[in-house]
Image (cartoon, rainbow, N blue to C red; front, top):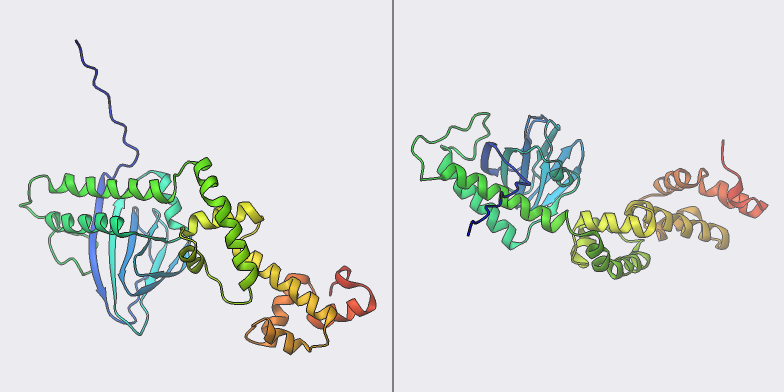
Length: 294
């Protein structure tokens, strides 16, 4: 009997690696905003950093990571009140499936962090120290443990495939089944708490999901982003209070938890085209939403 050998398909290939770093950054450290012809994974092992890139600007907390795309300008800074530990891996991968990880951070679970640790450990077998100093040319060891470079590549490819399976490439029907009830609960939670500060990080934690899935499902269910939805809720409540109560604009701003009356007025005009005072006057005159300021 003749056996048939099947060719194994490669979905994610990492042909070249630029660096594998494990940094302990001091308080207030800032990197220079730059770009390079490969992807860069950034993982916060301890502390927090603030990332600035072409596709995402915001904080990364402990156990969160982001992957900057090829030739995308980016930088990050560390807070002044604590030291920060960051893993940085630069690698080449042409698959656009990884692009989703440049738009929003993801939180790694224990199993994913262990896989990442294996990459860092194998990187020690491939590259010469120092590992905690930024460099444009990490030198390879002349004497390596057998198969170190192949194993480093395999660990990284396995890690990336695992992340894609969990965070980006779930079957769409399965995703709808998993999130339909959850999104209803999230909307109810926001409706009850929209006057308080609500973040994607908080919702992801409370409802056991990731930010990418949450954003996609929320937009599909409401037609709005989270910030747009909350802004609309605040605007409608502000309109109701201006129409039906005798409270001053300053009192309404305070009840809606705006930092100042000026900020509330600017927000209201951006959303409605009118200041709160003009809106209230129009309502008394019988015009309501039909008149805007020039």
